[in-house]
Image (tube, rainbow, N blue to C red; front, side, top):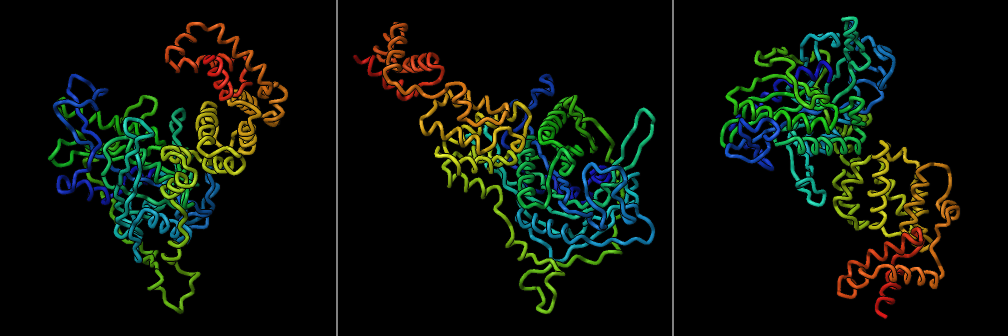
Length: 545
């Protein structure tokens, strides 16, 4: 959050980190170590003095709702400043909060998806602090009894950056709480003034507090990415980090094995997965270097400077701030029901039924990946890529349904050709100039043996131009059809053999890999219009004569 999240989670994280060695130390993928002379850059190298990094996260997800948490004001990104502010949002005297049912249901659904215990009775509290974009002087949150507790989130990380080697890990979810967002302060340095936009004030948030079970930036980013996918699958949050709908506070400390947890620092308001990984790893290395140089770690709030690639100090947290938590007097306890506790004479439309929400849970990302692997026979790492790119799974399935090519071959065209092009031009799947229909049409030409894979890549390059031509039109215009006359192809193969005496001798001596070079030369001579399988057969026949 802007102001609210800048003040931290209050007692939730203090309770976690005050455990010290009393709680089980998280299992780290590797110990971090360095020597003072190595500097920050080599902090991850194994050395004589091991360090155990500890990382926990607080994730603030904006609830996908048409109106705010306690008022009827509309929620809209990039609306004109202060155009979506009700009397309650501006904290005018006499205004009262009215709880948004949609926000409650979204929080319950998220809690169930994260294996949490949903509390049938939760409470709202006031968290007091002064900030210019918090008109009331307090934030309504759930400090004492949040809506969901004691969950878990499973995620996967690569081993040595190899997608083919994935390791599954789990982070515990301490709690999920409903709370208000604050407004936004816009600092104008040239005029030495700060302007306040209250459009965001009162927008509903879910704060997901993760226990300190992670040990590096890669794990932190992977956990948040999995959470992001879950929220988007549920529809409980759009979780677009670029629009501030998912913001992360990272709590980082290091200690030696067997010793209590070290003093933690909190890196605030990270709005990118890449920045999250960099911020956590930098902070781990900075703390190790500081301790090995004889210094101490301050309990402070820091920010990540993406341009410099480092964290910078914002304010000291040694002096404990008193948020003066108190029960919210204008809101009764939030009571939820399940099938057993729901009174028979109660109007079901006026209550939130946990079991009813549980029945509406869609397939979560982990289930979707398993189904993709089972249904299409693709590799597990390919299923991760399909789900990680917004809209790519639907694109893949549309192509599969419209082409005769096997899914295992289709996935290669999707990941190697389509996705690489999109990334090169910073495009999303929805912005692709090549539709699933066009790609399927192209792949069908390959399956019908009308064009070669080499020629298909030339056709695809033309399709990227978005000129409205079909794959078949491009094939005819550029004369990319496969050479159908086998006698012409035999002449070309013979000419290649005659011009490559050394390669021919190597093949006859038993080095069959050299045959691929001859196939490539034939492909070059035919400008990709020859069938590689047929070319191989013809070359082998002529070489055996």
